[in-house]
Length: 279
Image 1 (cartoon, rainbow, N blue to C red):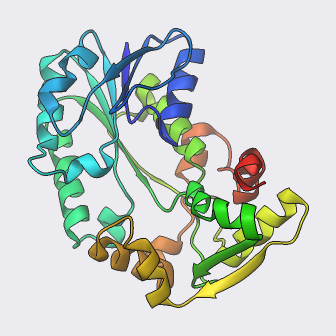
Image 2 (image 1 turned 90 degrees about the vertical axis):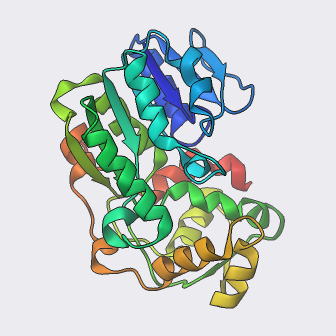
C-alpha cells in the first residue's frame, strides 16, 4: 500500500489517481473529508500532529510526503512524520521539497525544508526528493478576473521562469514510489521553457478563443493582494523570485525527461486542460 498526503491538491489528486490506475492499494490523506477515486481508502489527518497519521500509515510500504503549510504550523514537528513512517513499517518516502532550497537557501522556509531533506537522507529509509519550481496551477489565481473581466493582472509581465505542470510532478512522484531505479535521487522539476505572465495570458486567451487583456501590477500592488492570503515575508520572497530570477531559477531541468522518458508539458497544455476554470 502507498500513502499519499495532500491527496486532494494539485499534485496529490493526480498522483492518487495514477497509483490507483496502476493497480496499487492507496490511502489518501487530507485534512478534511474529500471524494477520492474508487477503491482508494481515505483518512482524515492533520500533518501538524504526526501521531494522528498512524491509521493512514498502517500497512503502507511507501509514503508521498507533502507538507505545505504543515511544515510551519505552530508546534509542528515534521521530522516526527518520518519517524512515524519508519515505525509503521514504511520503507520508502518521496518528499516534495522546493527548488528554493538550492536557489535561495537562506530563507526560513528553505532552511526548514533542507533540514527535513537531510533528515530523510539519514533516516535509513529509501528516499527520493522532488524539488519543483513554480507551478502552472498558480494561474488559477487569475481565474475569477478572466471569467468576469477577461483580464489578468500580475507583476513583472515580461519576466518569466520555467513553471511546471503539477501533473508532471505527480507523474515523477509515481515513478519514484514504484520504481527502484529512482531511489536516492534528487530531482529538480521544471517546465520545458521559460514563460512570462504576459505569455501565459496569451495562452489562456488562445484556449478560450477570446482576447484576455494583461494589466501589469507594480510590486507594491501585487504585494498588497498577496498579503491577504500569505505572510508579508513570503510575499516578498515570492516577488523577489518573480521579479529577479537568478540563473538557477531560469534553468530548464532535464529531470522530468530523465524520469518519464518524455518532455515536461508546456503551459499551453495545462491551460487547455483547465479551460473550464477560466470560462
